[in-house]
Length: 398
Image 1 (cartoon, rainbow, N blue to C red):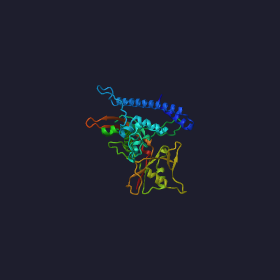
Image 2 (image 1 turned 45 degrees about the vertical axis):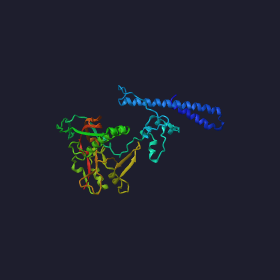
Image 3 (image 1 turned 180 degrees about the horizontal axis):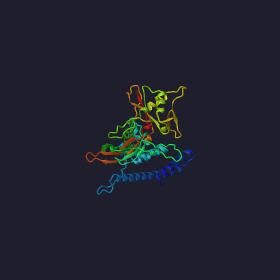
Image 4 (image 1 turned 90 degrees about the horizontal axis):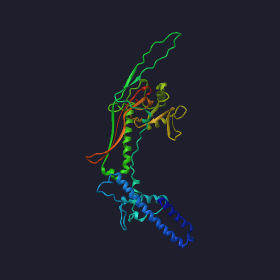
């Protein structure tokens, strides 16, 4: 019989006894007692087997199983009167199964799985199985907003990618006449190797004591750090040892809007500066604080110029004068103390930015032999440039 079947049968017996009340006979009580004792004994046997099996699997995973001269011993169970420490007890498979049964079915946790001590207010956390508590609380960061929007390529580093700076023009001609041949000038964009690296080390002791928490947390931290560094360089990178950012490009003079205090007219000027050829796919990009400044503005009829809607998926969709808004923390927020000439918002088609990754992000874990530290490392080779700046309109502090 399986553990679930045993628990179901015990629950049926308890419900039957409670439902029948005083109508139940002494012979039936005796029969139920005998059956309950047998079920408990079988449950204990199964729990012991599960514990031994888990111990064997953990030993195999750690490389101890099969080592000559090192026998695999099952996890010892406490004898009568023996007490186990709270941490070891709450982390055991027996206790975690008993705790699950207590939460789901109200089954009392067996005495042999509880320490014979008085629980104080400082010990309340240990009532929950220890692996459940292995969670690291960290400050959230906003990443991953820009990376999905740009054009991704995998050209070899140092390769020149051709671009065209002019379009051929068609002309009307008379019957039987020809037109002049046109030269189509081209340029090149060269992608380099910029190495992005992130390595995090934890001591062997920490990695062993809180493995379940650090195993997933470290990988997530490294990946988020790499994404954040990449996105930030795509916005304001100077091109020295990193990709060249959008704001580092020299925009067309007519497409720079300077203002001491953003107004409705300034937004109209920015929209007017955007060529109609780039109208459809360009979006606003700014910080959330700057967007809330625009959202407080109204037009001549008192209607707000910025709107926040909930799309079909339920996610918030921000719109400014009918144009989608992408929020990020890599653009300075507009304040009265913002330095003169600092960009605080821009319009751009992110597809006109190419992020070239020659070596995609690779995660590697290894042990430092000198100090036994566990090191998690990620490395990638990347470069990025704006390939068409005609869709770029920048608003700067005057």
